[in-house]
Length: 239
Image 1 (tube, rainbow, N blue to C red):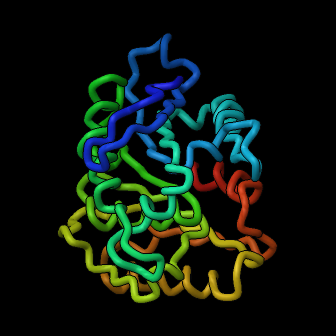
Image 2 (tube, rainbow, N blue to C red):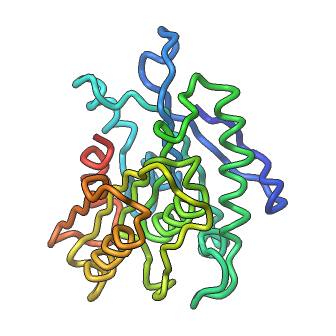
């Protein structure tokens, strides 16, 4: 379901295409559903995506047959040539980013719209955000900046090299535990696995994740930095 071809992003003074994937029985029930906000919609279910896609529509359909996967996915298209700028928070080795404004848009504009127009479970326990690569990095920041809004993070192959000295001191106190699924592939870069392990340890050391069982690190030694591997990981992370 296309929510809008030109959904307004007042924080960045631009518009964006945004999609909603609804559970198969959405129209036949009065149920309320958890929501997951995902970056890079172009690569999630588009058959013509140049680098392949995650096929999340097909994966969710299969999961539904096993009575799992009842969730609303809100997929936000990336900004094409402005993608890196939008997914970059603050000043990093990539220059100055617009990530904080972008995250403000998701949290203060898009989420209220989704909660008003769909049958959602709006509390943090049923609200997640995720993505891969730079989309994974911006989702990390979203969890750190808005811990009272997002209780679940799905982080695939995050571009942690962009912020080598990432400090995990949440700008807002996090009294509730956050559940994090972290994935990295061994064939992606020389030190991604090491970076992701350090990131996991920092999350625990900083007590952003107080219960170690709430942070799941999945490593595929043969995993490469592309949609095929993220697609394989999606159902496991999702479950």
